[in-house]
Length: 201
Image (cartoon, rainbow, N blue to C red; front, side, top):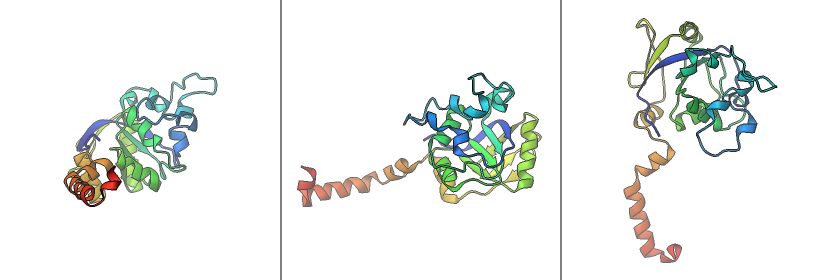
C-alpha cells in the first residue's frame, strides 16, 4: 500500500449529505475484484444521464476538479452498503483524502485499509474547507503533524487514531501488518513441521 504522509492537491466540493456507497460506485460496476479501472464509474449516476451522455456541469467534469486529490463532502459520507469498491473508485480517480463532518463506520475503516485518509471535522471547519474548494483552491494535508493548510497559509488541525495514522504513514495494510511478523510466523511453521509433520504433507 502506498504510504500517506503529505498530500497537496485541488479540493473538489461535494456539498451533499448522506452520500451512500451506491452513489459512489453503483452496483453494476462491482463485478471486478481488482482495484483499478473503477475511477471512470465514480459517481456514475451524477456524472452520466440515463441516455449515457455526460453531465458536463458535474463538479468532477470541470477544471480544476478533474485532477482533484481531495473531496470535501457533507455529513454521513459513505453510508449504505459495505462495498470496498467505494474507496477503490475514489482512489482510482485520484482522490486520497475526504473531508466531512462524519462518515459511516464501515466506509471509514475501509478508507484506512486502502491508503485513503478520511478526516472528520466540526461543521464550521468543513464549511471553511468547502469555501476553499468552491474557489478551486489546493489544500495540503500533513498527516505527520495532523494539519490542513489552506491556500493562503491558513491552518487547522484534525484528529486521527494513532494506530491508523501510523499504518498510513508506513503504508501498511492488514497484509503488511502481518508481514511484519514474518520471522515469528516462519519460526512457528518450522516448529510445527517438526512436531506435526502430517499437517504439511
